[in-house]
Picture 1 (cartoon, rainbow, N blue to C red):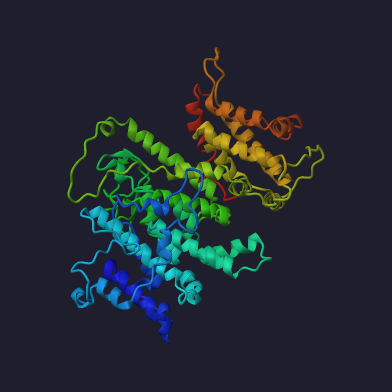
Picture 2: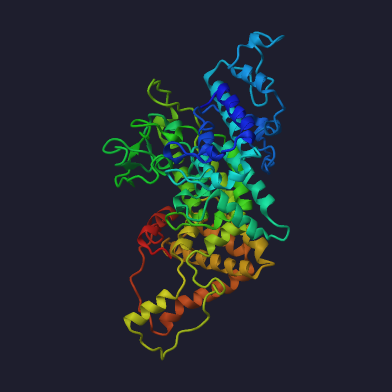
Amino acid sequence: SSGINAEYGVMVMMNDLPNSKDKSILLEVVGCNHNILHTAVTTCIPTNEKVNPDKSATDSSSTGSPSRTSSAINEQSFAPPPISKRDMMQRAGFYPVSSAPGSEANPPLSGWPGIASSPSSKSKKTSVANNKGLYILTLLLRNADVKPFLKTLLTQKDADGYTPFMYAIRSRAYPAAYAIYDCCCDLVDSDSTSDASDSEKKAALEELLCPADAAPLSQPIYMLCDNDNCSFTWTGKHHITQDIYECKTCGLMDNLCCCSECAKSCHAGHDCKLKKLSHTAYCDCWVNGPCKALVAGDQEVRMSLFKQLLKDTNFSEQHNDKHEPLLFNLLQTVIRQMHELRKAQSAPSFRTREVRRDSNAPPTNLDPPKFCSEALKILLADYRAVKSMLYEGCIDKNNSSSSKGTFSRNMTVLSSEEQRACLQKQSGTAKLDCFTYYLVTKCSAEMLQVLIGTLKSCSARDKEAMLLTERFIRSVIRVFIVLSLQVATPAKKKSVHIPSSKCDQVFRSLPHASIRLLAESANAIITPVRYGVSRPCALIPLVNTTKEAIENSNEFFSIPHTQRR
């Protein structure tokens, strides 16, 4: 359905639509329950890693995002110049050109909006085809006769549960997703009253982009973060240490496996599990079928779309199918990608690798994924995303501060059922402590400083932000205690422990809350022993290096062995 004839065919249909009495054709569906917008998005799916849409259409500054009127396609594509149907049919090839008096034998097509001259290379042809598909999608979204049906078309799901917007993101057709997002914003603006609040507009926009009954696995902002390219695109047939999965649905078992990126995109919803025996391997996702992660898509538009969703919606506060906040999910992804890249670069076979030419293998000339690392910095600077993470496990969000009560010698002994009831009323900190532990031990000081700056700027004027700051500091104290108890103090202090210095960085940057909370924590640790409630226990085995302490501490902050809260 791509090509010049398809483009003019859609324009013929658009011109005949006002005269048509039955416009229900717009609501018809084809295979996989795709409506006309799903089908238009299919023509925009990139099929070559060299594909990069016109920079004039998707140009964005380093700090901002493209404007809504020119982000996905040139302004001229929204309002094509008038043309007679006869001339249109001639250019589409339905009439012989010679029948028009004074016409040339081969009329140029490059003057038509959205049509470029025919390139010779395959990658340029693919790019032109994608631009034509984007032009077709824009014609449908901007047509006045289609507008009454737009809400129905935009919220209709296909067989996989994807709306056209979600389908465009999953397929890495980011310019098409931005065009649909642009249209949804215009619909919300036109339907909203003058006294409509921002929260009402956000709710209306979210309903168009991702209905409330959509599966958590299909959240648009999570799919944007999970759409990194397959590890095979930058490792080739060179074995590296990475997390590998086996998919029984696709037959990737025994000696075949797939990487984490393919497990999230190509094998989402399949019977796909992490292999217990982790060893060096390369991704075999492309062996048994087409791999969706071999093409990265337009990364500039992807980042711009991420920023817009973060700004105009509340998707960053929603949880995924594993009940994880976006910030926690993204932090885990960045740590895993950093570990895999570090292991690959340290392998001698990878540093001195040569390109192995294989006609059956896909191209391997892409760079390691960088999107998640940049998105993590943006999320750490976003207060709503930080609030969603720091409130994780908190039952009473209006009073998340620690209790200031003390132990009493005349405490009533509670039964087991009463103790369980009391524990259920307490807030949990499993994921918060795991997030803090990863941030302190496995990320750079720059990431931590961004989060400190966000809390510092908000806590000065907001009481809720002050409660969040205290909750974060208490988590840092718990991590600091676990790490410092394991490291034996050397006779001569030769170097500063990196995790301990990061904890000290938090305490020094947030002194007003840290001084009080450190004193309360010290008192809480010694109080049970002073009152005889707690008996001395076995000491934690001491280690000489911080690296060993971090390895031993992984089990303390392992989420699979803890409750969700």
